[in-house]
Image 1 (tube, rainbow, N blue to C red):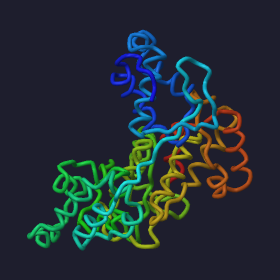
Image 2: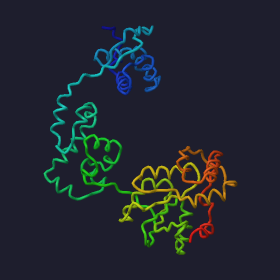
Image 3: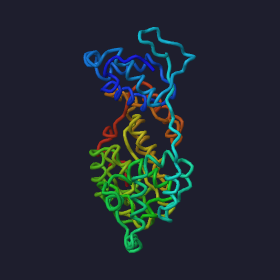
Length: 362
């Protein structure tokens, strides 16, 4: 037992200290760290009002009494009066998870429970979501419901009254852990539409994705003049990428082209800077089921005509894996691109005028 120093241990200090302990990742806690964090959390004036160090001491002792922490006696006392040990260990509750395991066996048979049987503490954190999903799958009319495909957000709201839950990383992880996916719930992601123009095509699909608006409209004018071919590539689809937006919206192409075949190709043309190249690389990575390539002829024209006079970037850009991008180009062109980026300069695609583009296409 310890001497009483007032009522502080039952007040705000105890709540703050317990919160800090619970949120701390490691099991061993330094008393000095806990003291400093407590003061930072509530501020020195309130800390003193709640008893200062004595209040802190009483709160720690109360948590020991409640078996929330135990002292590490080998760490010795901190030299203050009243004394505390220099380190304490969080008490990991040896919970009886048998009830939770039994609960898992009562879930809908459509759900695989192996993962959560092995990670019962993780299940405890998400059991409300899992039970809502199980209840939905046990509905007597579930077969009729799942016959009709709906959007991901619609299904999410239908199950959880939260239209975003299934689409965020937490919801996706829970589904995966239960052996479920969007197909299991007969729902699909929807993509924000992008602006595009579809032209007639005799052989397959060839799309050109243009990063910036002005260049998109210049190429649109060129295509309107029945000049849609460059270096044996005849385009039938022109897409306005709108910068990074295309990374989320490109899947919309499935709504435009219903006959996409293995030979179909989508070419990307953007600024020669880390951001523009990064957009292409990420687009290629996210949509690996499509053939997406940089449109080398326009990139080459852009760099070879303007690499000596291009300006410095206006903002600091995050470098990306340019080697993978440069592998598409001949050595001289690639080295010019590398030099421009290394010097912190860039070439916007607007450096190519309508006249330049008109002369390139046929």
